[in-house]
Each structure stands twice: as structure tokens, then as C-alpha cells.
Image (cartoon, rainbow, N blue to C red; front, side):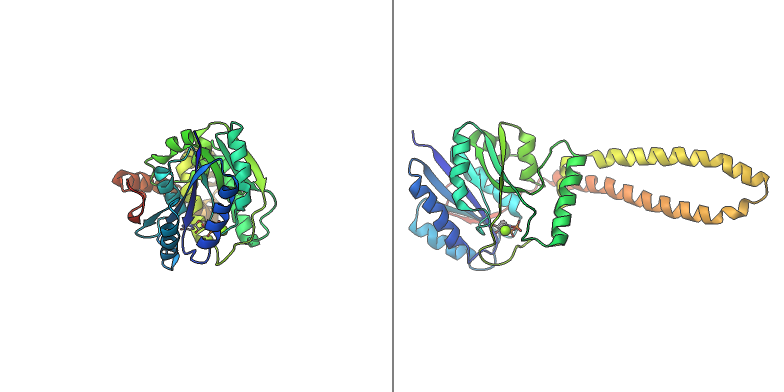
Amino acid sequence: MQKKISVLLPVFNEQNNVDAIYLAVKNIFVQFSEYLYEIIFIDDGSTDLTLPNIIKIAAADNSVLYISFSRNFGKDNALCAGLRKSTGNAVITMDADLQHAPNLITELIHKWESGYEVVYYFRKNKNKHASTLSGFFSTTFYKTLNALSDVKLENGISDFRILDKKVVDCLANLPEDTLFFRGLIKWAGFKQLGLPYNPSERNHGKSTYKTSMLFKLAIQSITSFSTKPLTIAIYLGFVFSTLSILYIPYIIYSKINGFAISGWASIIATIVFFGGLNLMILGIVGLYLGKTFMQGKGRPQYIVSQTNIES
Ligand code: UDP
Ligand code: MG
């Protein structure tokens, strides 16, 4: 039986890119005719002409499907919707701005055919397109995540990958409130292979991720993969309370020698320090509490407003 490949393209305000990416992906499968394919656009609440453009493409080509969200829910939620609706024996996820070169699709399929259940690309060189500040944030993010959690991610791991149906079935129905597929895929296990690549320039428009958003995303991803910060909070509390016990002999000594008042500065410094530490630890605890709060509501990860996929 002919195997089928699903290509998922999350799009957020990519009106000038949808035609180009569609043609590029289609062209690959026309050459690679032994496979059936479907291209699923997930419109993540675009406010420009992205959706009308996709609808036009889908009207002319029945291998093109689309799911449109009621608002912007984020790329990982868009991927989640695509994974749930995909019907391929393998699923390829890639950016729609042509930074993930479509001709690498053939390599992904070959590796998948050779037995790998997950094949993903990670950035080979330092990201020369990104500013040095965001480069710094990204490196710090991966270092922190790797130090704190059990999943290990390559610096610059991308969302350009192929997943076997088995892996898709595991990932598609996760009930998590904060999805972070780069981590979840590592967590899922299976036979994985990472390949280096050089991202191309963005075709049209600008990256939608701002540094402030990336910071929020980083905190969310770290806290959804690790509870180590909570353990660190306990250790810190323990270490400092032990240290403060050591302070007692000094207090007695200064009392006996009559220069107790000279400790004023050190007391203030200590109060400020511990005040800060307390707040920080409370914040960490609060982050996790907030996560269980959000998860407890059990809201869906996205809301679909329009689609051409029959359920
Ligand atoms: N994207 C999305 N939802 C968002 C932001 C981005 O679906 O909230 C899509 C976007 O249209 C593109 C891909 O995710 O296809 C990568 O986004 P972008 O190029 O902005 O990110 P970067 O290349 O900087 O990682
Ligand atoms: Mg991009």
C-alpha cells in the first residue's frame, strides 16, 4: 500500500508566504510520487489575508486541508491541532516562512524509511540571522533547561521534523496546558536522530517572536519539564537556615564584648537578602501553583473556528 505523509504548516500572519511554501512542498511530492500526501495549514488566528489565501489554495487542490483558530493560541497548540487531524503514516512539521528548506523533506523521509521514528533538525552554526541578544537568550535557555530537566535538547533544535505515526499517536492527545513539543518529543523516547541544518532567510515578513515573549515561553517550558527549581528552593532554605545558626556564636561574642550595635549594617543586609530570597522562592512555588491552576480548569488547548476537515 502506498504510504502517506502529512505536512503540518502552522501559520500566523504569513499572507505572503502561504503560496510559496505550498508550491515548494507540493513540488517535492510531485517528484517523490511514490507517496500520497496531505498538506495541513493551521491558521493560528492570523489577522491578515492568510486564511483567505489558504482557502483559495484548498479550493483548487484537495490534498490541502486547513484548520483555522478563533484567535492566536501559539505555534505548539497549532501543531497539536495538526497532529490530531493528520492521517499520514508519518507527519512532517515545518515553519511556513521557508526558513526550513523544503528540499530537506526528502532526507527526512529517507531517514524515516530507514527505521528512525523521529528525525529532527537542529541549527548547525550560530544563528547568524538572529540578533546577538536573542542568540544569548536562546543559548541560556537551552543550558538552563538541560541543567534542570531530564530531557536534553540540542542548542538550536528546530520544529522541522518527521514523526512516525506511533509517535504522533502518543503526542496528539496529551492533555497538557502548556505544550512544548521540542521537549515532549525527547520525553516520548523512540528511535530518534538529530541532523544539523542551516536555516534560510525568512521569505517574507518578520519573526513574530519578541524577546519578552521568548522569556515567557522559556519560563513556561522549563517549568513544564522540571520541578527541580522547587527542590533548589528547599536546598537554599536549608543552607541559609544552617548558615544563620552559625551566626549565633558571633552574636553572643559581640554581646559579651559590648559592640553589639556595630552589627546593624550586617542585619539590614541580611534582612534584605533573605527578603529577596523569600520572594524569589515564593515566586517559584507560585509558578507551579499557577500551572496546576491552569491545568485544573481543563480548558482546550485551542478553539477551531473554521476547517475543511470532516471530523
Ligand atoms: N507561528 C504560529 N503561531 C505563532 C507564531 C508563529 O503558528 O503564534 C508560525 C509562523 O507562522 C511560522 C512558524 O510558526 O510558520 C515560525 O514562526 P517565526 O518565523 O515567527 O519564528 P522563528 O523563525 O523566529 O522561530
Ligand atoms: Mg521563522
